[in-house]
Image (cartoon, rainbow, N blue to C red; front, side, top):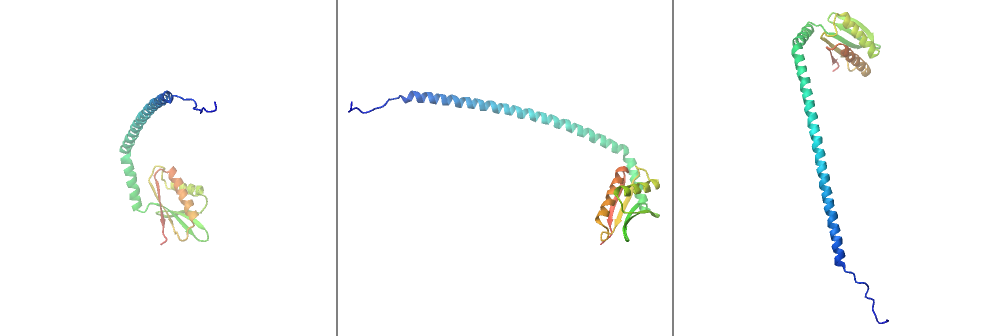
Length: 192
């Protein structure tokens, strides 16, 4: 058969293409269905979380409103007491009654504690605990209670005072303020 040409095997492609296209269409339909299901599940989850968030927000708002109402009631009940105590402190301040913490430097730094009558005590700058204890003993000795309004001023020369000394006395005053709820201290730098 030397004169025959090889024609190969003839395959009918249309039937095979039809099967492949049908399978491809079926896979795409399944993917679309799965995508719709995932979207629906995600939407349900988001809606549930949003509802939970809204519920928690409403509960927190209710609690906040309750706390605000209690605070307002407390202020109303104690406003007169607070106003009287503040006015008394302002009247005493106008008469010169105030605790003054004077940071002074000779050879070393020292803290002088004064009231309207003059020097009460003085001490070398030590730890904030020592200074806080000394201020508290002065307040107790002056007959001032932990609920009295107490006005205080830390006076120092910023050109001479050491930063660490100012910081130590400031920290001591803040420590006193934790025990005496109405202890108010201002800081006055007299250098210009």
